[in-house]
Length: 129
Image (cartoon, rainbow, N blue to C red; front, top):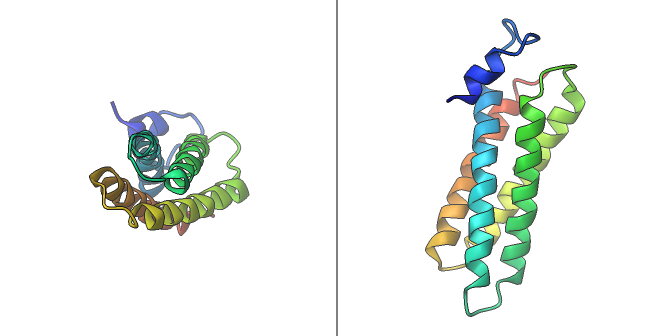
C-alpha cells in the first residue's frame, strides 16, 4: 500500500502529483502516532511530564490534520494547505524541543520524528502554489 499511489489515482491529480506533499502527509501521520505513543509513555514516568504530554498531544492532532489536508486534492485549497504545513512545522519544532529536555528513549525518538516531519513539511511548503 502506498499513499502516493492513492493520491495519483485521484481524478483531479493528473500530472499535478507532488512527491513532496505525499511524503509530508505520510510522515505527518507517522509523527502523529509517535507523539501519541510518547505522550502515553510520559504518563507512566515518575516525574512531572505534563508539558511534554501536552506538547505531544497538540503535535499529534496538528500532524493528523496536516496529513488529512495534504491528501485532499479536490478544489486545491492552497491557502489552507500552506497554513497547515506552517502550523505543523511549528508544532513539530516545539514538541521536539520539549522532548529533547527529557532523558527518555521514547522522548528522543519522538523528537527525531518531529524534526523529520518538520523538514518534510518545509520541503512540501516550497512546492505549494
